Length: 324
Image 1 (tube, rainbow, N blue to C red):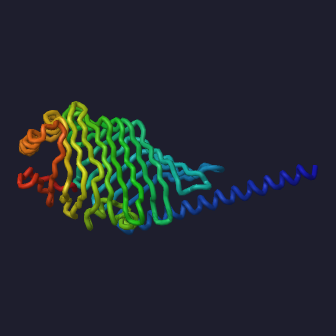
Image 2 (image 1 turned 180 degrees about the vertical axis):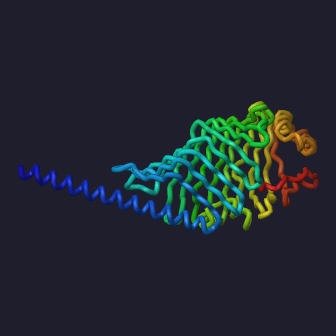
Image 3 (image 1 turned 90 degrees about the vertical axis):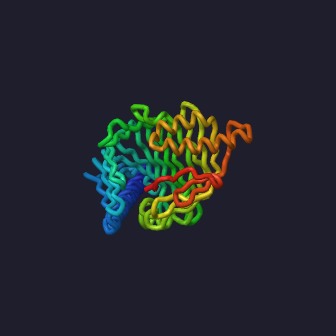
């Protein structure tokens, strides 16, 4: 009998201690959220989580919002979406899984506006002492509808975005699209696989919490480790090499550009970017000449870009527009 009372007393004490620990951690989370909102507001960014609730007792910490909104006055970026549900284990609150419900409204810095929806949007986040260490976003069956050009609706079957800290101040960023296309076939279906190393930027991103803000302020420097565009109707374009992006949005770098099945590739690019057809024709003549020299259907050529102006040796290829 005494042994049973002792065990019951121990269980009660452990439960009380666990409950106290859970509410302590929740209090810390609420404080961090409130402090973060204030800091962001001081820098011209508004973050709103309507009807914010934290629950999940006893084993999880769940942050729930009926609607979410993020607005950046400096860049003009605005994102509004539906319900947000997140969950982290109480003993590991720095790792969270987040699910976001559609529809959403998105306004880009160039004032282009979209309505968007998806069947699934889930992300995972790991935070360290200096900030986010790993971020992954996975979306399925995404529709992007420009509010002023509905005929240009973009559909993406599968989207993946991964970012992680490398060393003390570098970021590795990967963006993958599977079966992306426009509803009216203006953009033929394609896959995109890309990986970038951004150097000396992690601390700036954590302090400004915006990659775009850092790019506009000081530019970006790093390496395109992989950028592969593959139209599903044929052809392939791959780019890699060191690159710099100026604060004006113009690209500079020396790249190894690999093309395969040039006619199919140019056909897809001309459909996707009809206003740039002349540039593709000029590039194809230079590439075709090199292809005849080597006798290969897949060829890698060195391309130089200086402030957006592209060339193969002394042969000009045209100019890339600013990326922002």
